[in-house]
Image (cartoon, rainbow, N blue to C red; front, side, top):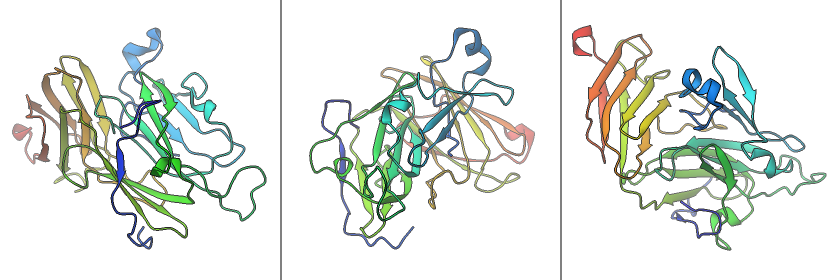
Length: 278
């Protein structure tokens, strides 16, 4: 994935597909940095990201626990985007496989002659640098440099290479498939199959314990405009990180611990029926 001032590593591979196919609760701990007095009790809680309409700032709310969310758009760098975008499909995922979650937003106006903004708008890719978000730059004429009437956005590992790709739909334009060419090597994917809980395991929380720290993800239903992403969970791992265990909190109440799961592949886990199987 791109970094500010460096070329993008997304490649558009199927823009010729027809466009007839089809705020946000991020699936994990979006903000990795928190106030010292709150960090011990509020780390690894899901934050809230909201893509808004023109004349409104996109919003990021930090989960401080006890159902209290603090508006942190300005210190997180989100307000630097301005108020001209009209956001639709969006996703918070670890696209760079570096352990934190970045943000992608498909934008495009809904009226023919907008008052201040353009009807066709660029999609946004916001890189997460320890809880600070920076808008990435891209080469001329690449997908993120061009203007679109963006609508739906979904995420999946379409080519099964361990990183997350994008599918973005538009008005009056073909769907764009963007292949992630991230070169980072260490990663882990998990696919859950519910038995006692719902089969899609929506509501499950997964905590990955490594010798470099703890990473959390949550499986949710929906979250992007008229789009559904692959519910599989992906983590990028810091260089040299060793995975100690994976803890799964199933929606039905069971807790399952997997010791030293193998990395660089997608692990399929079926919900245990009996407590002794957890």
